[in-house]
Image 1: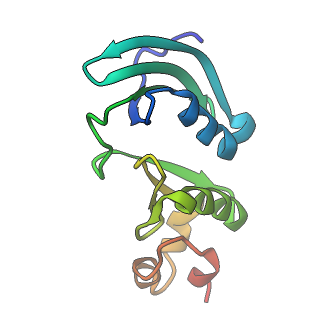
Image 2: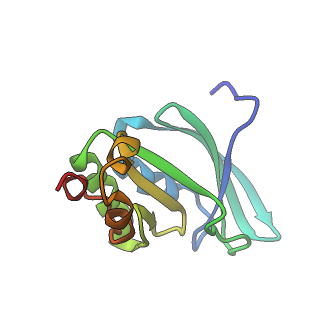
Length: 150
């Protein structure tokens, strides 16, 4: 893959440090919208076995790195937003991430690796212009579009 000038890098922790588990997890939900490049083994580092791989998700490049020992866990200061076409797409991503992760609030969830996602509809701005939209959102974990339309 041709490198972008700037690539977001995400540092994962797996038991063996192998990136293959991470790649498989995201490939399962993103399907053809996930493309992995060559895995680069970095060998034993201060964080144990380490590998990295450049990927594209919906055409956006990322560098994913996995280490055997957890060094820098993900937290709320960094997240990724998925703008969805409708409720079916929201449900697809949300249900996948929370299956081994957990729900938060207002469309936020955490996947099994601790990465934070906000899964929202493309028309969230329009939905938020509806009466009581803020109250609706504050009472939701997963965004349910229909609740904004009542």
